Every structure is written in C-alpha cells, then in structure tokens.
Length: 407
Image 1 (tube, rainbow, N blue to C red):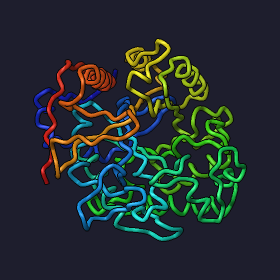
Image 2 (image 1 turned 135 degrees about the vertical axis):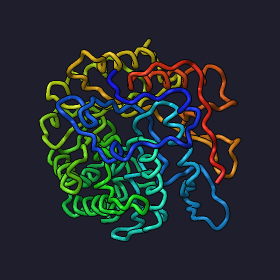
Image 3 (image 1 turned 180 degrees about the vertical axis):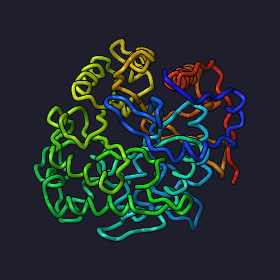
Image 4 (image 1 turned 45 degrees about the vertical axis):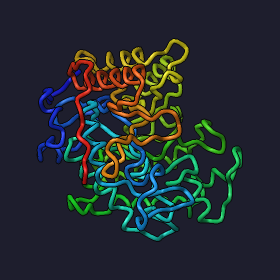
C-alpha cells in the first residue's frame, strides 16, 4: 500500500478532535491512468456506503420535525452524521459513497420535490455531511439518480414528471429516461442545481469542493430489464461531460450496473464500477481486466459483507487480498483502487446513544455494537483491518471506541 498519512492509536482514541489539514482538504483527487492521486501521492479509495446522509427512511423524528409518513423519510440529525464520519475514521475508510448526497427528487423532503421546484431545506443535512467529511478527511462520491423507485427518488420520478408511467420490468418506455430529450434536459437541470449549490459552512459550491471527489451517473443503472446494461453510451458521455463542465476537477463514474464494454472508450469516464452480491472473484478479475485495457480505474462500489454474500468459496478475506495485492507498492497499474461495503449505520444520536439504528436489508454494519454476536463483530474487524491495509497501515483486532455526540 502507498500512504503518506500515519494515524496512531492515540489519535483514534480521540476521534472528535480529528481534523484534516487545510491544504489536504483543498487538494483535488486526480487520476493518472489506472491510479488515483492526492497531490503526488498514490491514493486509494476504499470505504463504505452510507446512503442516508441527505435523507433517511429509518427514523421517525420528534413531532414537529420534517417527516413524510408515506415513505417514512426524515432528515438525519447532525449528531448522527458527525458520529458516522468519526466512525469512518475509526474503520479506516477514506471514502463514503452516499446515494442521497446526489439523489434527492420526488419526495416532499427532497431537494427537488416536484419538477423545477427547489427545497433549500433539503440541502441542510447534505451541507453538514460535506462539512463533516471535510473535517475528518473522508472523501465523498455520489450517484445522481437511481435505477429503482426508492424513497429518495430516481429515474422513475423523472419519467412520471413527464407523464410516463413505466414501472414494470421490460417496459420499453423506461428507456425514455435516456432517450427523451426533455427528460434528459430535466435531469441535467437537476444536476446543475445540486452542483452549483453553495455550502453554508464552507462557502464552496459542491462543484468546487474537493471533498466530493467524484459523481456517478447513477446507481446500478440498467435499461428496461434489470442488469441488461442497456445504458446508451451517448447518454453516459453527455451526462459525465456535463458534470465535468460544471466541476472540471470532478472524477466521473459510469453508474451502469457492471462493465458495459460499449462504454470502455468513452473519454469522459474516469472510473468504472460493479457491485458484488455475492462476492465473486472471477467477476472482479474480469471487470478489472476490461478496465485495465483502457487504462482507467475500477471500483468495487458495493459488496455484501455478511455470510450470505460469501458463497462459492469466495470469502471476504480472498476478495480483500486480491484487491490489496493490486495496490502493493510494486504494481504500476492498480486499476481496482477502491471497494465499499454495504452499508454503515450508527447510533440514534443525539436522542438515544445506546441504540444502534437498524435497516431492514440484513446488511447493516454497526461499528462496535455490544449487541452484535461475536461472528458479526469478527467480520467488522476484518473490514477494518483491510481498510487500514489499503492505507498502508497495520492494525490489530481491537475496535477503538467512537464517542456518541449528545447534541
């Protein structure tokens, strides 16, 4: 591993005081071929998915706070956001992938609750999340739309806004998200609204702030049928080129679910990605080889970390070892420089610091939860040790405590 930053155990035990230097915070992540850099130093991008930073669906807030009963959506508290970024430092994460930093449409609490309408209040938790990421030195990347009709919105919201109801798998009208000029322009307008928003804490637009190092066209994008990779190359290039016109230093991620070989030569793409449910070393190796052929970067942007995701003898340790070897000092073309488990949750701060928040997909990772069985805790330790190895550091099996913010 290649690293210029050393965190000692004493620092990890004083997490609320961890800050990153101004010069590092103001330095953009860059790509040179199949490697990423922070300044002149090779940089790895492993970490976690924390999808709820801009809008959550797991907590019913106190009476009087913004809440959508239809989707159970509410804004996460500042304390929850602060705690999760301190937790990311304790885990060794350098990056967070967060859907609701970029996807926020169609919900009454969204950035864009209806077509062309901007809800400024929805930026408050996003601003705070970017602030806390900047404080802790964690970088963010975010998709701009979703393949699914989730509480935070996605491509089906844009279709409905133009009168197209296409919810069944295989419906050819789904493809109009990519081909209908009016809808494409609606999507680009939304992207511009998000990227040109000025953060109330940093006074930087999201386009300017190096904390958000990359944007992704979308989450697990497909065409009419799941995993068909039918995302037009010209649409991908148009969207990523537009993102780069607004934020010239941003890295651009192809959000197609898997590697679409028709996209390999799109010049605007910096990073390709794939998701792993279950973990599959052959799939990883094939994808990395495809991306290496065009000298770009690859993220394993989601992987399941529970036993159910470690089938066919493809254990998480093997997955980690494969990625770590690609990032050893003697490897000139690492290609796969980041992996991100699904997904991290913390405590219900500040209301109840003894209560860890659950999510219903069976893949919730809690850091140092006393209620976790020993085998689950052991998996968290494996992830932590991997994330630190990706920074060039070796840590033991202890999980240093992360204080819970009470305000």
